[in-house]
Image (cartoon, rainbow, N blue to C red):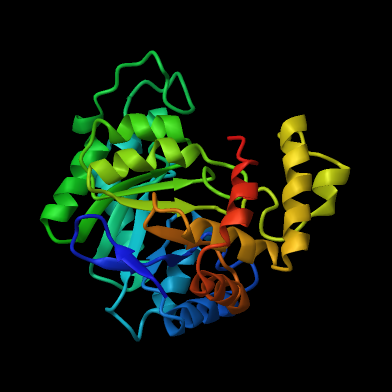
Length: 311
């Protein structure tokens, strides 16, 4: 499997990484088996968070990786506090980090990130507003307590690299332009139909950050879902509906599974370094690794998919 540079850290990571968001969706045992399968397949990047599977994702990785402590990069996150003040408390952030380490059975991790750094609450103590960054607010990103805490933990050797993650390309670009971090993770913005990450990932690359992409199968892009066409959900515009019809038709014509089509399209893109797959069973991560090893799609098929990008 292809490995790409992990930013300017001097490390490399497999182009396919295993994400922990769904590791317990089938069962704890299947989650552990998925971690073991990922290791067997040569995956060298594992991503999790205290939010995933209500924290159990980290326990699954702790169990799955307990007999192999090196040879890969392990990333987790901070965030998702019920009390807004804790986003600005070094004590709360450090306490959460210690719990992460306990579940992961580690003394340190390779990468520590702020989870959904595109939210207002990371950068402002104003609790009258809850949501993504406000365009009119002048945030002091670089001096935020959360970022200072990441730097302190890095200085102490508790994590080697620090980063930010989020789900909105414009807001994440705004944060990235004002902070110095090692990794940049953007989810829900790059797949067979969405291209929003193309505005943000070049910023990360120019700053020497690792470019990580997640959720490439979101909104029905893992397996064809006829109900999306028959009963379109509220988020699906008329233009998007037509493009879903076209991508499902392309998939049928190609003879590939939709997941294989998506992975092979993504590995042909140069903006990102690692694609994080949220698998819940061994067969799912194996399908994605096999797809990546087949290499990029033929150019004519790529061009057809490119014509469908709407976001």
